[in-house]
Image (cartoon, rainbow, N blue to C red; front, side, top):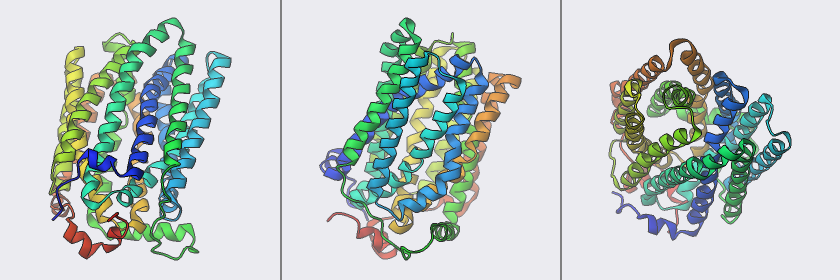
Length: 433
């Protein structure tokens, strides 16, 4: 059995984890200020809701192209070095884009596409390295709490960033669209550089080498694929995530269209609606860190099934407060679904395979995102907002709840300390005493 889950204060007394957490908090605050502004800017500058879909699609393509290799690198190289390089490259790209906005005033449409692809190309290497590193930085009984704290921090910074975006930056937009866009871009570039400063303080996080270092990366990828293929619950999770993400991918395209057609089109409204969603995520992340979820697969299916039903109800939520309530409910269920299954993957996967497993799940599930974004734009144009929400919600519910039909997946149990010692001893060698 696990000892009692670690508290957040205990986790933050572990210096390496605290540095990783601080770096991510800074970076995520910048992202919260930037992302809504970037999508909003893409739609306003080009005058096309379809462009929003194209931008979202190009953000997802690098995960399909480079995702498998990002997992291989995370299992071969120092994970700290990968995160540091990703942060520095992201900050530099945004500095260049922000300068171009100041010089041009109104950037060209193709620049949004280039930046979306470029940022994702370097960011897709960060997440496998970060997720694979967490079990090496905290004890086994702290992994669920570490994931919950990461989720809580992400959603708190989203909430704060969106509130600032709706308030201060929203007022700045009324004065000057150029300074609004450039300001959010430069703030995000600074956040990446701030994250890099804390990642630099981490110790080296070298993965356990299960295969010879001289093996070709393609051989490493094949070995990781064989490992995933040998675990039935991972195959089921990939199928469920693929279907779910295909349905959730168009959400922001529809979100922008909903704001324009139902709620007046102001950027502040979009930010406040996202802020309400983040409030639900914050509250849920706190609870998820304290729950002892014995059946993470069953929990995953049920919680995301509820999210799908609520998304379908958004089709009938033309009043702002009612739409915001649906957002809030979705925010309550998503962390409770995702945090336990993420901890299960980290604890049940040997360190030498962890990066590839996480990257493979992200790659396969995210590979459908470009299709979802493009289809979302077409659905809004030809079927309207109401039918798009109904299609998305029913698809999300079916994709999630279908996992209940697979008995092996719904009965997987969270590893205990004893089971880790017996079945996965190499994980324990990474943990602090």
